[in-house]
Amino acid sequence: MKEGIFNRTELLLGKETTHSIANKRVILFGVGGVGSWCAESLIRSGIHHLTIVDSDCVCATNINRQLIATTETIGQPKVEVLKQRLLSINPAAEINALQQVYCAETADSFHIETYDYILDAIDSLENKALLIRSACETSGTLFASMGAALKMDPLKIDIAEFWKVKGCPLAKALRQKFKKSKHFPSKKFKCVYSEELLENKGKDTFQETTEALPEHDWHTAKVHTNGTIAHTTAIFGFMLAGLVIQDIIKKEET
Image (cartoon, rainbow, N blue to C red; front, side):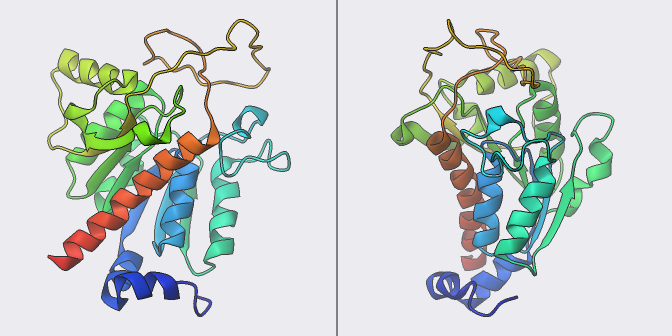
């Protein structure tokens, strides 16, 4: 590791806490609008062991909000682009990039029980619900991002325990899914969310591109894609990373 990278972090937190951060194992599912910024914040904060999971490649529609998306990275796997960026920040970091989908067929292969922190930035309702239930059955700490689309006001972004999240269609859909299946998360976990819910003002003139766009099956309006903006998704990601760092500090102090 290049000398001095974490001098300011150590000055703020102390040597023992900085070392504790470096020793934690974190796995992050989804490195798009929220997850990409979360990963960067984690590495800059001193996380040394990070696994990033995402099956997608960069497309032009990602450029307005995703850290790894530029005109030069279109077509490249998101996890590989992000891995190279993270290693340029800290070459000594251990970054495991998995271009895979977390689903019922692949869940066991990720060995999430071996991680201290499990972070959910998945869009798919089915896979998100599965990850939440599975993560809650481990000894690791789960933090999750709810929907970051159709948001503009940074002051409305907040953190709450999952069952206390208000005004978020994704959280509502997840709760309905858990109730319908009668298979609930076995423990409480915190989420980043916003009660704000705007409309797609450009939907009358919006043109679908030839690139694959995610179908948000959790959204009550049943639209194929929703408007997003960089500062909102980035704040969601930074707050998700902040939950990890604050939790490590809290446990270190106690």
